[in-house]
Image (tube, rainbow, N blue to C red; front, side, top):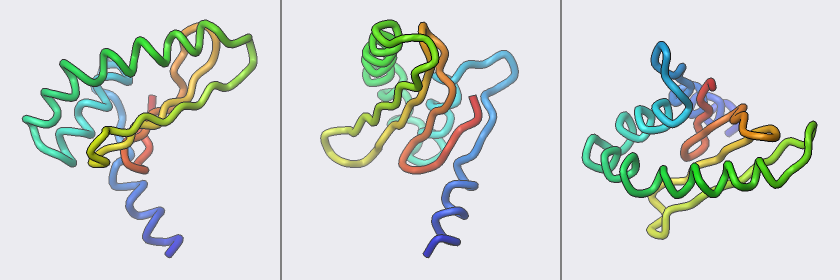
Length: 102
């Protein structure tokens, strides 16, 4: 079972595009897994809200504290996991269990 989990994680392990951001990496991962129309909705409606909420959490934290938060779509089709450091540095991002390099 552990081996399958690692294989799934590696499948979604991507670098952001050159000069890109963790948001772009998330959108690309959603597009690869769920399709272009879901990714477009994710990028224009869902991601801005996740970004605002998470950056607010980071800014409310303290230096040296790792902030972690999971976001789940209401229909259960997608989960987003973010980690970061004060004041606004996102250090890890993942969708549905796959980790992205940020």
